[in-house]
Image (cartoon, rainbow, N blue to C red; front, side, top):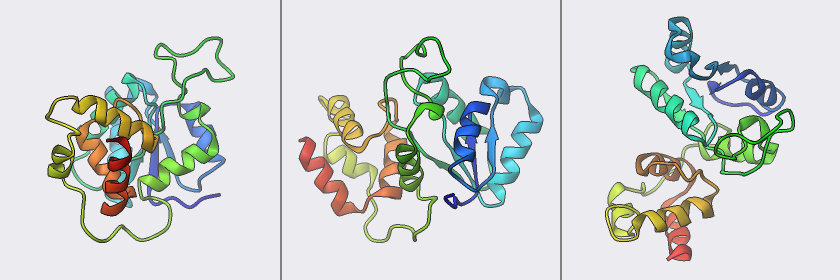
Length: 193
């Protein structure tokens, strides 16, 4: 079992079952979009955010990003971290057909990729990264947003780093600062340009 700081928030019970065999922290389900209506679920997530923090680990599809954004919106105090699984196309064993977007959810991702996502979020062991932070201006200067072909360049970087294609510029910045130092960022950018 891997020790994770705080609690992890996932979408459904199969995600929770999957993670419970890997991590030794509380795993909270949103019951999909059920969190939108459940004041009890929101209160529980807020409580964990204020006492150790929560890490949101939703699927890389549009529904997962919508739930992620909703949670970040209703948690005003405490710490909310994001862990992102890579875009892996296929279907879970228990399902008859793939999801609408054809991507595996948390329950279908291999252990190594789940652990890597949590490491990138900075919630498994180790001290926070020190040194020069990666700034929004760096992303702009490197053509990753706000310029011609920036979405193609950003997509190439996301793919290289094993991050979901739907990740926003702000989300990318959070992941970069929690998982890479500035030199590693520079190296990754130079490889895609």
